[in-house]
Image (cartoon, rainbow, N blue to C red):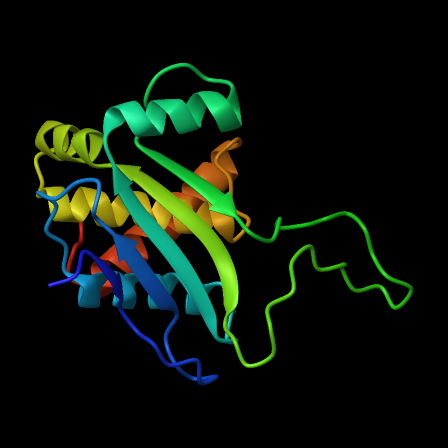
Length: 180
């Protein structure tokens, strides 16, 4: 069994997002890739994205996520999840016709790459224990959180935080991972 898997490989318009899950850095991680695909589909479709798209999810240890956190956010120490959108939610630059300029253009016939979500597996396991639920639920929660950031959400305001939590919990409930 490969540890880097394309969960879904179709790029038809009506197909779910392609979700690539890389657990090579955390061999102990066991994930239900079908549940993750359904979770990401619920989130992406809930945000109105109907075009073929793809997302990369990577599970890492605390040392690697701390390195990424320092490099990309200037914060020393590990965190639970980081997201790296390939297309910034808004570039602030528009063409003559008023449409945003694409920072990265996918080749014809290929799904739109959304970006990467990186999850600290040790943090997810510890947080699952702290919150009293399974590690699988916590990993799915962190993936949904990171994907919503890629799709333009943030939690800098009370309203933004409430909306993100509502969307996360609704998607988790759709795949049988509701908070108990």
